[in-house]
View 1 (cartoon, rainbow, N blue to C red):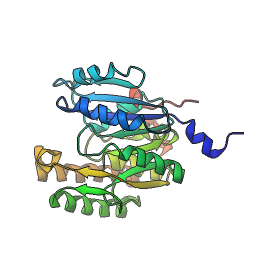
View 2 (view 1 turned 120 degrees about the horizontal axis):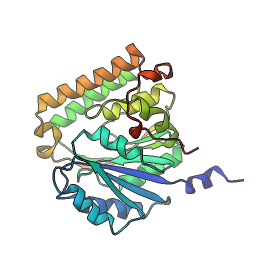
View 3 (view 1 turned 180 degrees about the vertical axis):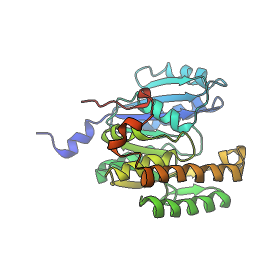
View 4 (view 1 turned 90 degrees about the horizontal axis):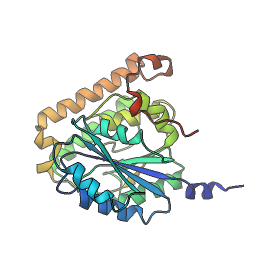
Length: 274
């Protein structure tokens, strides 16, 4: 009989990396992530999804992937469709028992991957999330982003009941079973993708959601908030979050009885391994 502890060592991890306009750093980023994954206790695969082939991100990622053909896969599509779409696109191709994603940038120290996976095992979690407000986290980011983050998390806790202090860090892991149930239901492509995943998971009964420390150094000048405009970004985030609340609490769109109304394309659905 296989013990519960031994079962963790049999698990397979998939890490999805959504990438957009990352030609300058994608090879370095992949190298750092693979060096961390090589030290974990699980076998793994990396799926890099290029969210719009508008520069040499795809070519540069493929160049690196040739060194690790059994571990690193690169895929993508021509038009930029948003981080949420890219993550789901990669997750739909995942073989892992534990499936996660990390943003393709230099903000998040990839060593946090190991920490999230350790929390996954220790707590027998449904989901683990990187959290800027974990007491052990090391974070450098602007006061503007800090204020927005605090206000947003208070709103998330009040309206969705998801009791974590930070839902927005681009590093998360999910049990495959959770994603098999949640991915066919989600709609948001960009600003509220993380909270839609977490709130629908929580709504469906997957409430073992635990935060883990991360190390983040955010260059605010290059962030989405600056590139797309502070007010516009905040408005879009609040609008998309309100839409998730409306579907969840008013329309009950995510309920199984409304399956016929779910409009997620089949190629974005993670199929069961059973």
